[in-house]
Image 1 (cartoon, helix red, strand yellow):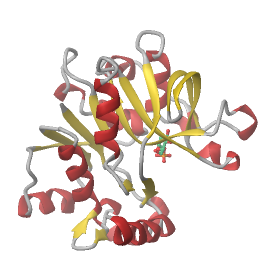
Image 2 (tube, rainbow, N blue to C red; image 1 turned 60 degrees about the vertical axis):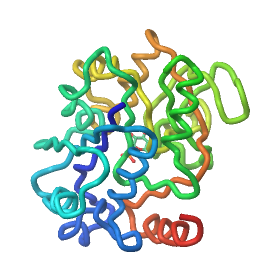
Image 3 (cartoon, rainbow, N blue to C red; image 1 turned 180 degrees about the horizontal axis):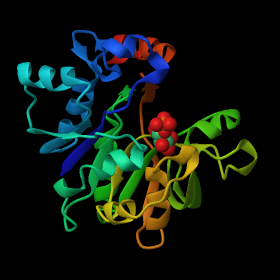
Length: 249
Ligand code: G1P
């Protein structure tokens, strides 16, 4: 299994700090956030980690040159930025159509209190290798910041089959308060959908929109993974991540 970490964003919500230090390089104890995310992927079974970054962020590569992880890291540069779906598409050539599900970990989402990716792997294995999207319940008034899912059937308390998914819906249009939470285990067919995906919300190529189209072909599950996601792309989320990592690793 290969992992993919999109980490090319400009970090505008953490400016001006991020003009000097990429958000993925913010320290969590003695190591940068990206190193913890790479660890999570490798612990979950990734034997190669593809990191999508930009030439403006050489510190990420530098860190792993000085501190190699337990699996090879492959670097892909995203030269222009047209959204998360566009970022993921840049790495398509590294993922063959016949391969295992692709583990995608957003580079600014840290999970404390458990390995979300390992838990999702278990769920996928128990369901014939199907796609699994990590999710969390968010307050209704915040749904417009996330990809939001509609479940077709509840299988267990935290586990359901997806009927629909929509990126950043208005509160009144949101099908639920179940939000995409920074981790995906996706059938590689998603790359086929990304290739001709048109721009969606915010004029960006959205990964969510490609997953939505893939639902016609593939079964996708939603799963509220154990642990808490922290958005380190803003100062407050970063502080909360530090507190949580300090308490329970
Ligand atoms: C991205 C995804 C969104 C997801 C969110 C948190 O949005 O597009 O579906 O809910 O990450 O994982 P962004 O935070 O980049 O706007």
